[in-house]
Image 1: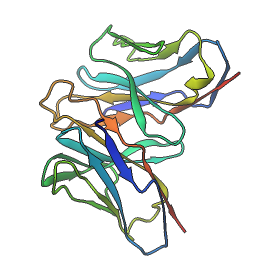
Image 2: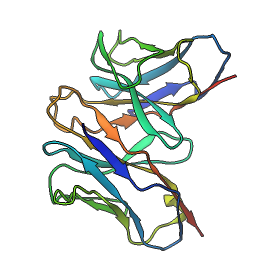
Image 3: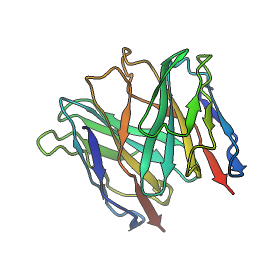
Image 4: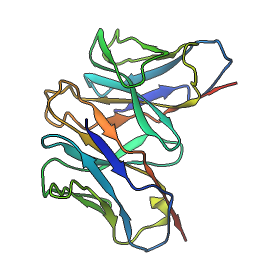
Length: 114
Length: 116
């Protein structure tokens, strides 16, 4: 079945450091891929998405490229801020079923220190 | 502003009691979902509904029940049969599967249930 694997946290960085959070997936066909972010005490918000191979999703300085050859969708940001501290979830939406169901990774906690 | 409202934000329950978590959306979305979040386990799907008066079990439906009598509302009941109910519960909504952009979900702020 479809699955998502993302790197375990916590990831601790200093402000202005470069961020990478790895995400790989297993799926049949051509799934859509997402990154959601959860700030403390809140629900999830869509950060970015990509719907086909080689697409790059971007938002708020974050980027991720849909790499079908490596089945990856790594999240990157060139210079993190304290306000980026949150839990980041990689997710996959597969096709072939009748449901609009997302499959989530386990989440990666990012802590940015001033 | 359109969005999803979950209530209560915090809830305490004694063992053996049923509790109902509310989820209301004004986004005119057809599909609604309940997820459970536990530390280190990500989000797991409990139930989902693609249309009024219809719903399906997700991956961990045992000990839970739902109803979908109105498009805007999708309450979740955590029954006494749920063996480990302490968790953070998230409600989400999205357009139906046939719509463009159908696969983007909007989440509520969550309800934290603690069993004493």
